Image 1 (spheres, rainbow, N blue to C red):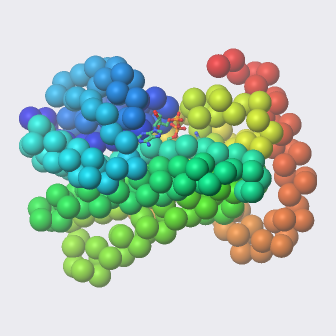
Image 2 (image 1 turned 90 degrees about the vertical axis):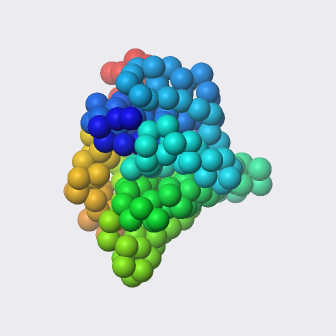
Length: 273
Ligand SMILES: NC(=O)c1ccc[n+]([C@@H]2O[C@H](COP(=O)([O-])OP(=O)(O)OC[C@H]3O[C@@H](n4cnc5c(N)ncnc54)[C@H](O)[C@@H]3O)[C@@H](O)[C@H]2O)c1
């Protein structure tokens, strides 16, 4: 049994999820490192060390999420933390994805977050304590150009996250918190794979973050939960302004995207993957 109890991270075989798993292990948790890629999850669990362990988990499967929650509690002596991190980034015009891809994006990014949150609450509510952190995106606050489908899935995820925190509050459950973290672009394999994709340029409009810094912010939320945390903070008023006046945002798009594409090219020239 670990000093801090059990923590489960989804999509933790690489990228941000890997960094969150390592940060949670450093904080003293026994981390259940999960991913659809079982080998990647096992490698990260080995890096976490201690009582951490790995398993294959596809977040689209609600029953599998519930079983993973029970497994964490059984092996770590309780489920204290659940981080919904697994996600995919489809890019391009909204009409370019076929039905299978639309369904996949919603099932992983939105339904996966819902499945994980509910699996965690099933064990946390009877104990009256626990923390859920949902990794959303700035695309959950405003529609990102070139990332229409992704933005729709992330808007669904943040609505469920804030709504669940509100439900917990109104049902009088004050020991359980659900926080949504909305980071700017992060330099992970998700963007390594999109560095030549002009439709992904919106991820370069602000500050490209390092995964270890975002993981640190995610873990800070365990000590000071917030319904919505934006990283960096200054992006929040800017995006909420665009969201409030979408007509202006659409007119400015050609300028914004041209600048983003320049930044994306410059980033690629300076950073080898
Ligand atoms: N990279 C960014 O710019 C950025 C910015 C803001 C938010 N985010 C969000 O952060 C989270 C992590 O992204 P990342 O950049 O580390 O991506 P990544 O592609 O590097 O890693 C995603 C992980 O999720 C796993 N995964 C995919 N489908 C899954 C499924 N069905 N079930 C379980 N695991 C699955 C993958 O195997 C992979 O290990 C995502 O929710 C993403 O939307 C990313």
